[in-house]
Length: 478
Image (cartoon, one colour):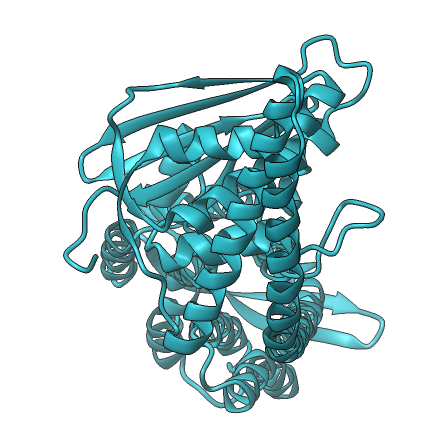
């Protein structure tokens, strides 16, 4: 009896030793606190079971007292699962997810208030645990085998013992909430860890329930604890390792961007020289040659493109010198219309039409040149993404005002973007196109960031993609 109790105690210490080691390795991760809290309760649960096998050196009164005392472990396991899930949901950096009803429900159930309510309910169960209405007494039982007879105490439950069992069944609610929440986690590494956490916890809980069956519970529950602890610890370490790799890759990308910035400064100087030559010959062409109406329209677009390129080069040179973008209050629709004019040739060649809707007098704080280029990039991407056999080749742009912001909704008729790539497309050097450099949308993201605004994917399917641009309507710094 005493050797079995010692074995159970050693097994019970396994989860908390691993959790403390994990916290020592990753002290700055808040998720480790939740894991430590959870595995600590698992250890208390196992100690609670081991006490029932200490009849060789403890009195039945002492065993009953300690059994009730350490029952806090299984009771607080449920709040600790919710708390770990809460920390994981807060750890996810994604904040632009559309608030669906399912997400709202899971967020409300994974809140501090919900965890507090479950914890208070658990304490009520713990207080009832000290009364005969939950644990009436302990009875001595035995397990006979070819190796001999094993004696242990088993609780005889009272009239309110169903409350404890019902509390443990809250586990399924907690796991269901966590499972529903995983689909809204943007980080693939965190999502994988949460799924493994759910799988391991299910194994642990099912094996833990075997404690209610005295003939099979000892070996099964102990094995479940060992497997669960190893599985969760290594899953967390893998998540942390993969996250660090992503962070290192981000640093490498930033170094590449810094290097490109240096090269860009040199290219701008050379581009200015070529642009000056183009503008000079373009002007000379209009002075020495006569054109029909169509030719004059083409010359107009050439001059418009030259002016846009000249403004873009000058604006970028100013940005490199001052590290800030010069802005003013501009008419949003006029800026969008200029971008449409700049891409008119490509639109006509591909048979696309652009419909611009919204009030004509909507104004926002912006740099016209940079915003021209943002819309040019979006339109060109839409042209390239639209299949040749698409019946309705159309781009719809809606501009509206709401409170202190201007929202520009951009709908294309392309082939769509997979959900898991909605954030990646704004990362430099990531492109879905065969010959793409992955700079266009990252440029848009950077420009909108400098404008204190944002660009995001709202929805996407095989019929097209919905982008939304947010701009502050007014600001003190102009």
